[in-house]
Every structure is written in structure tokens, then in C-alpha cells.
Length: 38
Length: 348
Image (cartoon, rainbow over the protein chains, first blue to last red):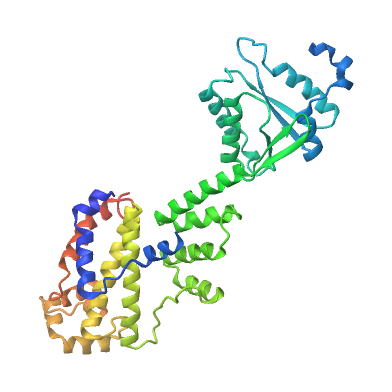
């Protein structure tokens, strides 16, 4: 399994679309926590 | 002086720097790095080290000589030499090592100091004034090491490696002064690994320093369940993106399949405001009666499949034909070939 395998299937654009349709598009909670730590 | 003359001069033999260090630190073992070049050179220190080895033995101090056979001015060779030395002497890592910065050729001293800082947990690099016998201890090595480790820590966090960052901190107690950073990293590690119950317990034990993560409970109302599932999906989406950025593609694949199955279920439950877990056959029948389209789709041959009653993923998928997330279903489905062919599934 590689990055190319994932990218070729358009997984993340499709996931972003689902988030935009049914969920809040909020900042990533892990990244927010990292900003606090760094 | 010759090696054979040792007995005659033993009582008068004084080595100012080393004697001062012995008096100050009472070492259990002395390691001497002595030049012993292939082509003998008048400033080689090997035979002096042999004399000192004998002197130390008489003082009851264990010692050993590490021979350096290259040109001591050759910086590359000096660095390689000390790199190899520390690789072969990993037991020194946690030793209370005193590294003498006095004496020696600049390239050798530089290499020794560099690898001491890199390899020893708490190196103490000292200099001795051979006239006044004063020991000067500098903590610049520790400062440098701490800065280096802090950079490593920041890099690990930026790469979302919470577990690695936490381990780095716990292995070096003095690395950071704020204990809440270690706690945050451990909490993030639990959260990233979906160890949510443990994360909540940890939060409670730390005066609710972290927000409580919502967990599913069979006794919840549909509304409560949907609210919790919503939060869990937000967590799963964040997790997927982090896993992708970390380059953990195999792990990502497993999570994507869990996402697909649960997302279908959630969207159906949200659309129809129902629960699809723990349904009795009677409840399933009632639901099917309310949504006849589902039954028609699943039983084209007129047989009521058991799958229908259990509301499995396939059935649920039929219910959401009007929901707009086919791109995701297609992306995940197209990855199923990769998954099935891998050793994570049927690749053996």
C-alpha cells in the first residue's frame, strides 16, 4: 500500500465532500493540540 | 624515560590533570584514548598510557586503553573512531561519565566531546587547570543536548508521533519542565489509538485537563446516540488525515473500511432517526414495513433474506441510494482489491 494507491482512488477529496455534506468542517483536533504543545 | 624504568620513577610520577580528576570524582574506571599510529610518531601517547595503566592498577583503579591508530589530526577518522567506540560501548550510555576536555589534539577532543554529548545521557565535560588544579565543569554540553532533544521532540509532535514524543520525554526526565506536556502527549496517543475509555479515565485523574470523549451506550436514546456518533466520526476523520500524513497507509486502509461501514449505518440512522443495532426480528419487520422500498430492493427473488433482518451493511447501503456519498463508497470499494490482496486480508 502506498500514497499513490490512496491518491489514485481520490479517497480524501471524497472524504472531504462527505464531511462538507454531513459534518462540520472544523480544524483537525489533533493538529490543534499539536499547536498548543509546540 | 623508558617503560622499563617504571619502578625507579613510580613514586615521583605525577599526572596533574588526571590526578586532579581522580581526586575530584573517584572514578571506578578510567578509559584512555591513546594514539598508536602504524608509523610510530614521537608524540604518540600509547606507551604513556601503558605506564598510567600500571599506575592506576597500583591505585586500585580499573583502567583500559583504546588505541587510535590513525593520524589524530584527521577529523574524519577521529569522528569515525569515537562513533565506533560508543557503538561498541553502549553500557556507557547511562554511566556517570566524566569526559576530560583537557589535553589532546583538537580533532580528537572535538570528536570525543561531540559523541559524548550524543551518546551519554548525562555527560559531564570538564577541564582542568593544570597549574591551579582547578576543575572547570561546563554544562554547555547538556544545554546543547537538551536543545537537540527539544528539536527532536518538536519534530516528533509535528509528525504526529505522540507515542514517540512521550517516550522521548519519559526517557529524559529533565528535558521539559512542564509536566502537562507529557500528559497531553499520552492523552493524544490514547485518543489516536481509539483507547477512548482509558483516555477519559486519564483525563479524570488529571483534574479534567482534557475534554471528555463521548462514548456509546446501549441505553441511549436515538438522539443521544446520533450526537455521540457524530462526535466519534469527527474524531475518525481527524484520525484518518493524521494517519495519511504519517504515511501509515496500511493502517489507513483498515480505518477506511471501518469508516465506510459505520458511516453508512450512521447516515441511515440519522436520516430515519432509528437505531440499527440490537434489533429484534420483530423490530426489523416493523422497520421494513415502514420502508417497503428497502425490502423490494433486497428481495428481488421474493425471498426474505436473513441479511435483511440483520440490517447488515449491504442492506443499509441500499437505503441510502439518495444520499450523496458515492464518491467515497467508490473510493473505498476500489481500495478493497488492494486490501484483499494484501497480507492484511487474503494475501497469504
